[in-house]
Length: 594
Image (cartoon, rainbow, N blue to C red; front, side, top):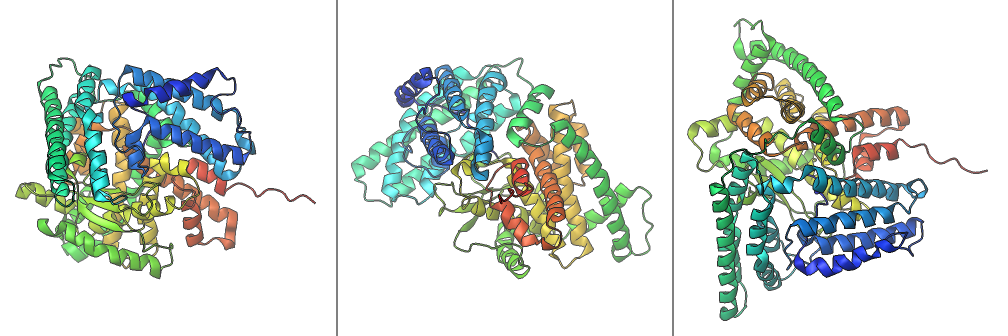
């Protein structure tokens, strides 16, 4: 998901911000002596980022910038006001440059910075989610990052952890003051995620202390503060449970807010409505292809049994038969571990991309503080910590009923589990993240575009199958179309729910009968659409734009076109929006002067 520039500011940062905003009086903005060329723009970028990290130490830590690990941001009216001033100052400074005179790399950075600064102002003034989204208040992920990564000696990281805990009670008390009419579904998510991650502070921190030479008396102070921190988190969860809220805000974003959020977050050449329309057409096409394959396979699996007249029923029966082949509940994660070498070898054999074996990929059980949104995800190292670990987070089936686990495993059967791992790992998110961290731009990593990243992951699935992964078996192709329908129907679902009035029953019916999803998967998707917005459209939007770009690039190069060259050139732009990458890749070369 795209990180945004909505900044929460600690009280310790206020003096810095006042000094920064004071520079507004200069007619040319914060940086009057930078000049206007590419070198000046690069200097401006570095200064901009330095200011950004001082304002948002949490975000800084997440991207591997550890100077402010010991600070915890606190959101309130004053900090939001300062953020609006900050955004205005930076836009004034940015507007001193003429984007058309900058080189390709800086021109994309310029557009991304401008978009994110505009987005920051819109989030505070129009979206105002700090009033209705209790799940946005959660300190645990940054603490987990400090604890789990190895960028500094353990004792030093634990001291940052300890210092950062001091403001946690104030953080949650201020959160309670900000929340006015919270969304019920987001309230439940906030309780689940905050309580789900308590072990990071309560148990993991104490276990890590035992591995150090920190004096026992000092360790006692540190664990005492951890106990106060845990109490603050539990108190917040209890406050949310007891919060009287007779007229909660609907989780539906509404058409106008949705279109604006889509514009800033996805950065597409199309509107949300246009992408929705395209998704509806794509669904029809995929159904036609799935019907053809199901007819081809019918006698193999059903013998002389009559083919149902309703093509969706026929497809559903074929998928249901194929889905019975899956791993056991306790083998789900180990099966994924075994798949990664197979995917690596295929990419190398087909020469689809250059892989970097020096960048570690760790497959782990999904942490509790991330639970409740997606069943699998990738967490990559930040651009300042390029040698850090990439984590393939796998949802646990522990404690599930036999029926629920069976439904989930039928969804992630022996075919889909391979496509899932292509998407999340190789050559999907994990590989794209490695390339992004090599791109010559910190801005593209910091403001990474989610639609580009998700689009690449979906595109990589088709690319692998087109190259022969799965031995061109029709069963694998049928299951990929089913999986591709997930991206398509994600878009239809998200738009229909947040810009329209699609009910849960209507959503579940679409997902189970038209996207052929298991009940557990459909239920999980409804939960996800009720606690998020726009992000679900990023998969299909990015995929469609990458496929359109590849077609245009083929047309441009004709017989000089090579798939590997396209893939690596595309990824070389980092996590920039596909819209901007397309402009760069299809640009005509400058005319040579005689």
